[in-house]
Image (cartoon, rainbow, N blue to C red; front, side, top):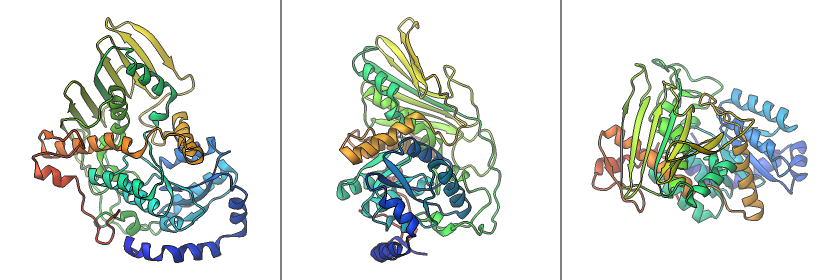
Length: 440
């Protein structure tokens, strides 16, 4: 195992070795694109397909020079897809640290399991890269704070993948809410529904020959490989995943607090359970979360295994105000007066969002990448800088702890820290595999 400590000690040597080994063809590709921003995509299952789609949408300004994944069959499949999509084949690496050692990579995008998000982003910043990191930007609140500190230290950009921040119609309607469209906005209700099946009872099996299981685990404490972990069900194990709140709740909770113009709450309470199946799933499949503010309220409902819709939508956000209400989702918005009469609406004509879509390639992700690229090239302001995206992430991590401990958590609104509950406060800092602790 090459630990983080050993990696840092060999970074310069790796850079030199990889420069020598770069093929003439790949070098000419890079050299011929010096006016473009060079991207490396890391973690290639699922959401990485949206990264590829959005980089294709912005191809006049970018090049995908490298891709990396710990599983070689996924790596090869994604490289083939990149070649088909972009018209050229990127360099491939099973170990992402070799990518970080390359000076000609400008940006890394991170679509790995959650336990890798912040540690990998911090390593990327340390190696001089800009970062696009999927939500959640961290596994726990302390990691979120470390990531912000790393951004400040290394002076590179970090954009979180809460892509609705770049949705034109969402930006428009949130701006109108801020300007008083529905009076004083005081309530946000967010929801998500899906029909996920059971993950069963896993059993220990030999690690597939295609998978570097040690690197997959990375900063997480070591455990034996089971047949129901990879490539997606890790979401539902506490060692690596963060539950449906962080997997999907991040998006709409972020929209609600954006519209309400609120930061950390005074308290959080969460209730729910695993009701549909008896299996290895370690989180809830049903959860209701309430955040308290002095003059506002925000709630989230997540139903992993029952897709009954609210307002005809799998997911969305309802903002109530003193003069009316707004329903907004990824496909449009509706505005209602106090009598419940719809007075305005907008719908994207060629987009229908479904909670069963695990890739999520769409125009707002294209715009979110375009915003990062413009920020790198010309200094445009990021739509979701890490200190902004981290607020909703921290709020939902705290909801997990409230659920786990079955009690209300009192918070410091200045920073989201737990107050007067040492047991809950301990949950905000994870245990790391020795030698893999991120440092800033």
